[in-house]
Image 1: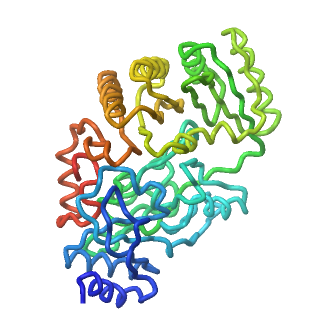
Image 2: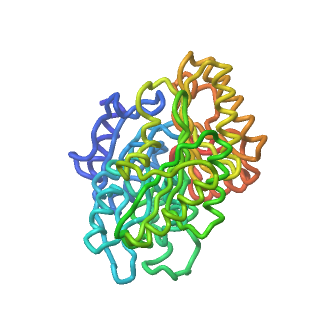
Image 3: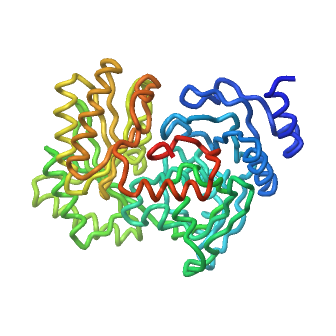
Length: 425
């Protein structure tokens, strides 16, 4: 018997033969081919799998919907994929308290469909919500333009259940918004890229579904005016739920603003916005399709697989500078570019064209510029040949020694997503 067959037999004893199988080339992660994939059916099976892997020294790559499996550095090891596909239930919807709990493998779309039955929502707009799971978006801390009004995942999550590498089942937080008991594991696990424990389920605060929504798009003559308008909206009595700036090679520069509420309230806000735009020499137009502008971030991943997609964090007031710098660099290097930035200062930039060497140069120059502005650049997607030659996270934070100690405490044998996080954690 080969080692892979022996490992599969041991895992089958824990979760059943139908839920422990060999992987295929589709399961490859940044050039690494895992041997097996296991799908626990409940928290006890997941605990048993992690305890077994920890004792056997088997490296584990947790996976939800697989939409962001390529994010982070290439793993240093990963013989086993641990899938949460079978943990896909909405556990509870306390609509009177406006909270709800779901298992890690439940998709964001399925969760919101269930919440909509009582006119509520998880106010979150991650990438690919029809495939992205609750555990996955928590692990990478993915959120979109709705963050302007509702906050990020760390603001929405109030409780969590995780399994540690040694099989310990840990719970933190509660099912009511004002619960403050215990250590704040929910915020610690959010954005940890599956390096500290495997999320089993989570509880969130909810918001009402809006009665109506309206997206207004402003075609701006230049980035400076668009940025100034964005800042004036933020400094006004207007209450948009989301704002984003879109630009790219040969494309008009557009600012999208979304309002929700009653039709009367939306009318008042859009009229006030129209007056503000008129005073600045531009025109606000209602989008023909309310949802299309907000799909622009997903569209950055479409097309040429040889492109680089990166996340940039700057101040809201620096967005015009970002557009100007990207345009300057890409013109000099003859690259194609697109970007979508949110009002909070987080943006996604796509660079494409030429060859890997030119992309590397553009990436390094853009990262150096961002860090000089006090911001950051994290590579989310890139050709394997590019990714193998860079650290996707860039400059290590000052808190890295503390982060390493936290990792050593939670995962002393380093079996979970080894090397994928900041500083090789």
